[in-house]
Image 1: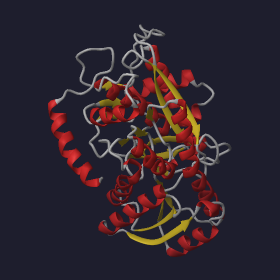
Image 2: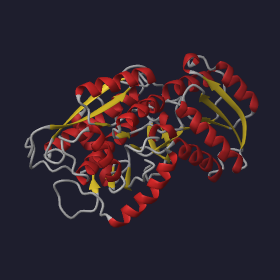
Image 3: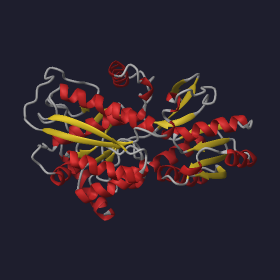
Image 4: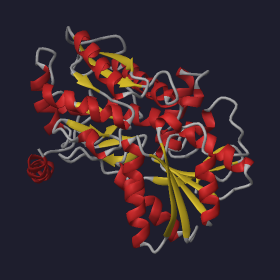
Length: 405
């Protein structure tokens, strides 16, 4: 499989040179898909009978629900816009999301439920460990998988699997380089979830890059999903190590507990997190004084002033006025993922009478031929490994607001 992917990368690069980038329907002669614009002239009108069914899997309940609900809202916004503009290739789009509670076994069950529904393509799953488990199933079915936020390397092992977010190795490298380039610390510690591939993947790359950057990793403290409530031992060890900065390649729920418990113990180092930290401000009853100065990686910042971001934020708030706490990078990645699927489906001229495997064959080529001007990045392209051309940026929480660090 890996050899096939290497050969596919070479082939896809050649194809990219010979094909124009996919356009947003129904506009002609444009090289990019602009995910911020919607043509409403064809609202409610579909040229063809039948529907294109896009499934999604992610945590709608449980500790990681902030991510899953955000993905659901972002995807639903994009689907509504696309249907208002006449659908994909003239077909109406139907979207359904199943809850996996951030559990791999439940994610596979959700996948089978969506197959019974008639899913033709999968936009998901949301978190890395479930996504890796589901990707095994999509590979067997040759089904297209576009994960908005599954960043572990094995999430996109199949030839028909792609991601919108950046990968775990990229995050670990960027974090270590950011610490060096900004002289944030010479002694750092890491707290990571050893039972989660997302967390361990970022941690491993971070530690390796820190060594290259002459940054001393003085402590590596692990926890598991079963022990993610009491971090007193980890904080005690890190405090004793003399770490000036703590890197947290984890999700926001355990991170919020770590910040609280460290503060209670009188330990207040600099904190830098991965993209799983996005959403911490949206937690119910979050004490913003605890997250003051927290930095983390993200491809999306709500307060950015570029036209694409402003347009997206305005539309999201109008559609979800009571759920603005979910307007984070996961929501934005899902929005872009749906538009990427639309662009590739139009490039490949997908029709509803094609079976799942045939759609997968056509889409895995088309995904390498499109360019997306998305909310999470301009001129996003994909190679045959499934990786996007995106680089994470670092943001910082100041006075309860996120701004570029």
